[in-house]
Length: 290
Image (cartoon, rainbow, N blue to C red; front, top):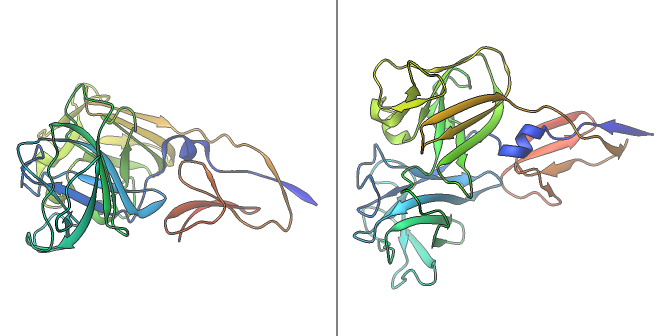
């Protein structure tokens, strides 16, 4: 007999889910808007369906160079250009090292917003001018910090908000949040040290506005545990909280069905590889990691 099964939550499909146990590559150097300050360095986040691929849009200056760090501290693994490699047609071969040894720093031909994609498994990167050039993009990722997500105030597991591909000043994510409070961190390195200048806070007069580096630790409140869509716009400093759609699309599946997998963009995947997916069976849907 066939059963009527529910599929993936529409909210997760629409906006991309929060990714726990995320990884980042911190972009540092004179070519960035934050220079060598690791506390304020933004990070390009691992993509939801492949944690060997990192992507983000960021403003880079051609007056200096930059490199990638796996953590916001010196002495760890770093990525830069391979020996003799240069950025040609938006592509470059990478090498790893530490303390400025084993690789060369990278520079761009002209200042602007760049879409950066790094594959740490194949040691390649594409760095191409973004379609969006109206305003410099300072942040490549944002993070939810607070009691609405377990573990409470856990920076290592902080859920990431991903950039919109066409409007990189907009960040969005969906997930189930518990009753509690949260604020937005835009630089995990300084956030872990509770540097006030690494956070957006709730505006005292308007909860739909967010203010960077504000006194008072004002946070947003979630009153009920359910799925939410959180959208942050760092161009006009607004933040919206909406209940995520929980409507379902029916699908007929045989009683002896095998699991069906979707990536976090809602695209069906026949052979899941390393990453986070939505697994669907007759028992329901859940997130799984390979």
